Image (cartoon, rainbow, N blue to C red; front, top):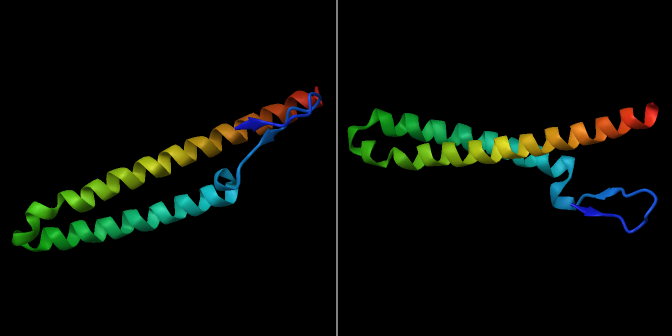
Length: 91
C-alpha cells in the first residue's frame, strides 16, 4: 500500500480493488465457488465413470479456499492496524 505524500499524517492509500467492499465481494464469490465445487464432487462421486475427473472440483475447492483465507488475513491485518492506530491516539 502506498503512503500519502503529506509528511504529517502518513495515511495509507488503499486502492479500490483492495477496499473492504471488494474484499467481502471476493470472499462471497469464493464461497459460491466452493459450494459449486462441492456439488461437482457430489456429481462426480455418484457416477463411476466420472471418478477420474474428481480432481477438477477438488482443485477448485483448494484454490478458492486459498483465496478466501488470504483475503481474510488481509482484512484482519488491516483491522488490527486501524484499531491499534485508534488506541494509540487515545493514550
